[in-house]
Length: 93
Image (cartoon, rainbow, N blue to C red; front, side):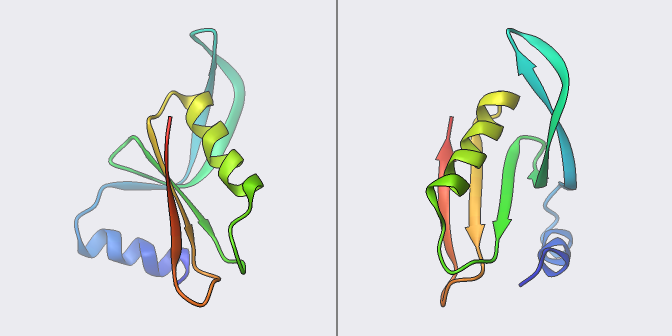
């Protein structure tokens, strides 16, 4: 499944989302000029990062965790469509 197909599923299921959402980085309570771009943000606060590789790496997990810490969001889902079966990690800040 690619991001376009997933986007269609969000529409079919009435899931509010933003695609390639720019996320402002917060440092010491203040927004910086720096930003991250999440594949999707659902419900205004859940980061969805999509991968298509044989397996998820520690770097993939750290990327999602960094997004959470920098944006002050609480939840990210790291989803890998490249393995023989779908794999995912739920990451909580």
